[in-house]
Image 1 (cartoon, one colour):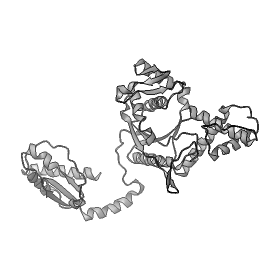
Image 2 (cartoon, helix red, strand yellow):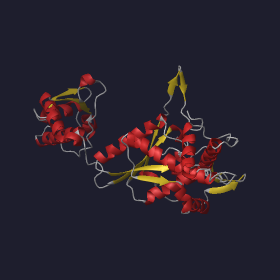
Image 3 (cartoon, helix red, strand yellow):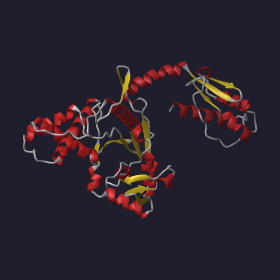
Image 4 (cartoon, one colour):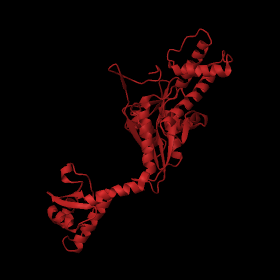
Length: 383
């Protein structure tokens, strides 16, 4: 990295100044090289001379002048100018910059790759993770591009990257998906039906219903919502995957929320929270003591209906993530998760796990404009 190379040159210049007697002996602090606030001051700048004033017992300007006198006259540095109260402003040489064109061309697709991840090779990036009752809409593609770009950057930095999609195929939303498809199935077969009040209204629900009719005909006339949910879930899964593939994005792991119920993960997490005194019953619901971790109020984990909120399976999912040995876990969340994810991290601490390996990136919603007005993209009314 160029900043590190410049910092190394400055360290050598300080050591040379000490050897020449221009500076006294002292222990070197870290040398920081940054871009100056004003481009007119140069390409890079360092304030190391001001840090050295106390150990060297000299004015920063004199220290800076001693350092500049020892910097190599050619190579990457074109000029180094001392500015009060002790800054060293650096410009890269024209020859050095011109040579970088050849370096870039020689490196090709590997230009800019680095070894930041060396020794910590395992990273996971979870992104998109869109609820499956509908196809991906354009508002979710921002998170897809952001997540894939970060995954590529990590891979270029030496990490072995796993891209993961968390498929929220459990809960009331999936039953409503099944109910919606069942209603359209009956409607297409000429039966009177009342569409669910909170049903999914998109044309794609008809597409799923038509596919079911082509496969089973009228055999499901007496069936409840469950087989419709299973068929719709499979259809959505393929639709979402195909959309992402069209964008050039492929996932290594598709993690199903249902598996957390099937293997007992959710029950185990809830039991651990109870055992550690961080879960309690009140008003027919189960609550998490989020206030113990700085939240403004406690959070519901299980509703009075017996249905878990998003927080409980999400805590169980992250317990699973941490158990897989990743050195770095990156979560790409839309803004509607900004209030939830601190509770999930707190839940991990509550069950005795270190959430320090997890990094959360929040991105904003995207709205389109129709006839001069912003239009929110929402799955249920098929916007």
